[in-house]
Image 1 (cartoon, rainbow, N blue to C red):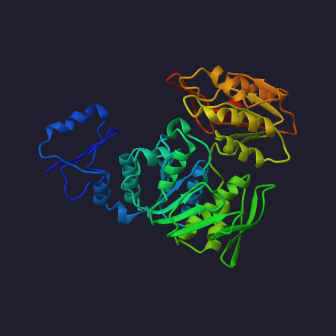
Image 2: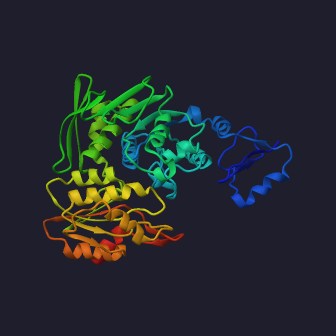
Image 3: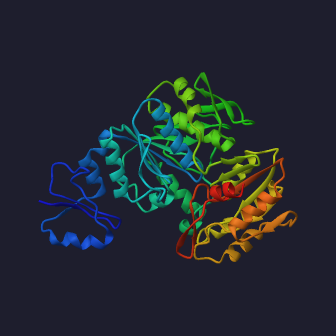
Length: 426
């Protein structure tokens, strides 16, 4: 009997009913779905059945991270620590899929289709991985792209306004995120974020401001991060080259998550976290002189956290807002940029099908003072203008696209990299 697994993204077919592996399975595109109709007595497997058939539910521990901001950095940090502890591990998220420090899938959706995730899990298992760290987006939860997966640990970073073009209301967005934590699985929750709802059973917490299982009791973020972490009655010190309080949260979540995996003692985990140098496009220093930093921040809260990580510095900021996305956040982004930055340059981000001028007008609605405010629709020209006006004492922040290598304009993905533009000009 043939076994087929069909999905709008891709499908598997094999003659081997005892074991489906990467060599016997092959992928069919959407256009070739009619191929299945040539088989008689074909059994269609659900994702859950395929997960059980591969033994994914028993052979590999899946760590899922969700939240508005911090998913990519937290997932990458957990992955880095596990590798440094000598274990084999896979990582799936915004930057693609990696297995034991090798890329096995290119960038795509934060959380791809369930069958693509299953395929990546199988590749990780075949490579000897005991752990698989993955980002879980709110879209993926709503669209059941994680259905059937058994998570060993679920991690929550934070929750602020985003994706209302899809979820319509903040309450809907909160509800979707909260549904991920409604079961009795092992959970790690940011205690300082009050919006998330969760099942308290098997729940651990971390934070800076409120009592938590893993609590930061002292820290400095002047030049990198130096912190003291308390777990019950014991204290642990750790350090990092990363910037900002938001990265202190990401690091704390990562340390706590790996501790809950029981791979090593917490003191050793705190020692190796210093090896994690961050993620491309996340508070990435492109130039030291002048100081130019590129970051993916594209929400009001994300921008605010970046600005606050550089308190006391004179800031020049270049940013825009994505088209065909939540329009209500644009004015808020403008207001926050005006509040924190000395010089503000508004430009185009990924306008998609929208007119960039309309997006810029929405951002300007949140800005009252026009002093040191500039509008330059062309993003390359905006960066050029920023570099020209930047003084030696100022920090240039280019926000919104991070390490993206393209701009989405009217259905086309045109090559464009903030980092490469800066390097070319300098």
